[in-house]
Amino acid sequence: MNDVTRDWVRSLPKAELHLHLEGSLEPEMMFELAARNGIQLPFRSVAEIRAAYEFSKLDDFLAIYYQGMSVLRTRRDFRDLTFAYLQRAHADGVVHVEVFFDPQGHTVRGVPFADVVDGIVDGLAEGERQFGITHRLILCFLRHLSEEDAFATLETAKPHLSKISGIGLDSSELGHPPSKFTRVFAAARALGLRLVAHAGEEGPPEYVTEALDLLRIERLDHGNRALEDSALVERLRASGMTLTVCPLSNLRLCVVDDLRKHPLRRMLQSGLNATVNSDDPAYFGGYVLDNYMAIVAALDLSRAEVLQLTENSLRGAFATLDATSDLR
Ligand code: HPA
Ligand code: ZN
Image 1 (cartoon, helix red, strand yellow):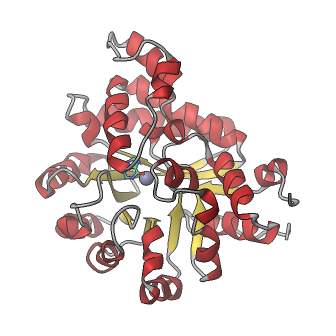
Image 2 (cartoon, rainbow, N blue to C red; image 1 turned 60 degrees about the horizontal axis):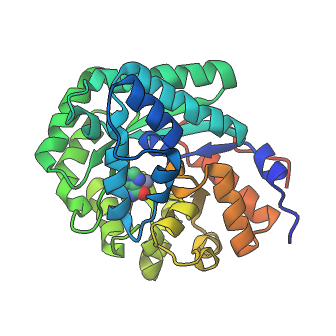
C-alpha cells in the first residue's frame, strides 16, 4: 500500500486527452436510446451486454463498438452522450477534455454530420456551463476505410471547422499504416487543424515513425510499442511528444496481459510525457480516475509519479492550461 489515495488523485487538476465519445456509451444509455429511436438491440439486458465485453484484441472490441454506436441517431442523442461523459469526468476531477468522435461511424448510417457535431457541441457547452470543464473536439478518421472516404469526411467537416480543433486516426491498426493517410493529414494541416494519431497500440514501432514523419502528428495516442525501439524513444523524448496512454484499455484489449507489466513507469523513467486516459470507458471497465487507481496499484506509483502524469496531461493539451502545481 502506498499513500496515493483515490481522493488525492481526484483532487488533482487533470486533462483527459484520449477519450472516444462513442466509447463512453454505457449499456443503460444504449437501451434508453434504442427505445427512444425504435431500434432493436441484439441484447435483452444490460447484464447481457456487459457479458459480451470480452476482447482478445482490438478488432473484437471494434465490432461491438460500431454495433453499440448504432443507437446514436439524433442531435439530442449526441448531446446526452457527451454530457453524461462530462458528468463522470467532473466527478473524477477532470478540468479539461480533448475528445474524439468518429463521424464516419454515423454518416454511413445516414445520420447527418451536422447533427453529430452540433449535438456534441451542445453537450460540451452544457458541461462547461455546469462544471467549468473546458474542451477541444478532435475528428477521427476510421483507418480501415479508404483515403478517399477520409477526404470526403474532411470536405463535409469544412463548414464546421470552427467547432473542430484537430484530426485523429483510429480503428483497426494492423494493415492500415499511417502512410495510407499522408495526403489527407497534409490537407488537414493546411486547414490549421491539430494532428494526432493512434499508433503503436497493436501496430509496430514503424507505424509510430510513420505517424511522426508522414502525418506530422503533434501528440501520440497509445504509443506503447514505441518502447521496442530505443532510438524512437529518444526521438519522442527529445521532441517532448505527449503520449496518451490508456491502462485499462491496454489490459482489456490484451495489449498487456497483466497491468503489473504495463510500460507506463518505463515511459516516465525514459523521460516521455506520458498521460493517463480512459479511451472507451464504458467498454473497458473504468473512467479516468479508475485508470489512475488501477495503474497506481499495479505499479505502486508514487505521489511524484502521479503528479508528473497529471501535469503531463495539462501540458499535453492543445489548449493552454495552467500546469503549475504546489502539491508536490
Ligand atoms: N483503438 C483504436 N481505435 C479505437 C479505439 C482504440 O482503442 N477506441 C475506439 N476506436
Ligand atoms: Zn483510442
